[in-house]
Length: 360
Image (spheres, rainbow, N blue to C red):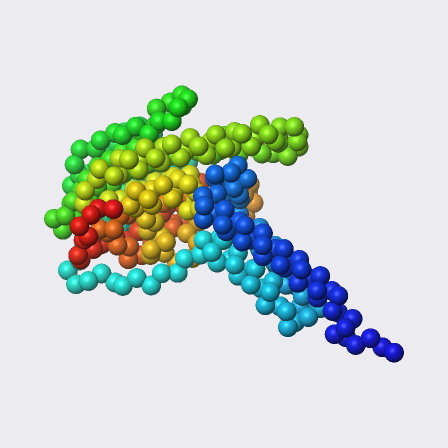
């Protein structure tokens, strides 16, 4: 007697459903970890800087297998894939109202231009194309001695160390604020300044928090030599802790601000980090989350070796424009990957029509 097709495939379908359930539980654990602040744990901190799309690979595999075994159960692995492509990868889709009549829009650009000196024409072309009103650059030491300085000759410019602030509108004098953490060799600052839009003052902070690069660079060696894994985990945890200290210092500075506030720069931290949650608790929220569409990734394309003609895919969003409740995002997006190893981040902002009484 021939086996019924459904019965013959029942065992395979049950196994695939079990594997899908296990995957779903794993994704739930990652989601909860991200909600709590992934960098509370070294493995969570490591996951923050990995392409989150890798979590979709098992779901896609299970979907393909389930399609061959039981089409009616396809929804289960597809749900896992959707979960990854949506909340786990940070997908945003906003529908913001346009500016009200008479409202002035401020276009802000923030970019870590560490390698900008290698392709200054691309940086200037990007600024010319996007026409920001306020430009905040990090890792820009010496950049004003290049054609960038001539480009900003008609702008209002403030700078200190690695920071450059260039505005089409008048600026107040900039103030240096220190964000050092214990054991740091070089002093690390942020740069605070103010401008007025339609008669209202906006305070903004140009920031660049401690990089995870040193800790992450130990990963290849730790994979080849398991005894080094504990050292790698410790270094990664210490690295995350140093960045959190800086975020706490910045949050304390934000608590004393009045009026509209912008924090822009390379935070070296995705949304699921304790750094981001600390700043949210201080009263600023992400402009891309409020007004962006897509993933808004700003970093990661540097991993493609030079000479390979491959698309410049970014896979992590560590560059941010944060605003408090007295501002509203009309639109937020990222730029090209030609001028730097970081994509510029943009936001069109307007003052809220009826600002809340508190600035948080």
